[in-house]
Length: 131
Image (cartoon, rainbow, N blue to C red; front, side, top):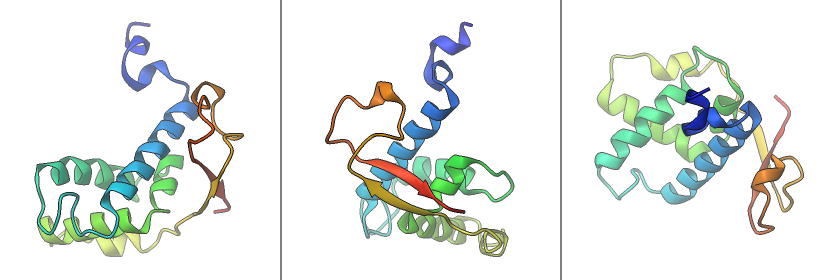
């Protein structure tokens, strides 16, 4: 029970997925069209973001949050770029080519999100469609 009191362990699985989806959306928005988070060259923040995204996007494990991450073209391209730069011998592109990305659309309501996170009408929620 002690472990549930801290970190994501205190949330239900659907809440963890929803929190992860919001983090992916924020990271995607922050990155925009840049090659790296803070500009034209990788920085320390890129090491952290890349580590999390590479672990999340690995095709060896199937998870709802991975399928959500695959819906962000800029994050997938960023992870591919970082893998090619720092791990050129790893067959990342070939391994990932077998996966099919999902389709997401933005919703103006929070009808599909856990109720406890819908305090603000201005929050954008993501809904999964197909796949």
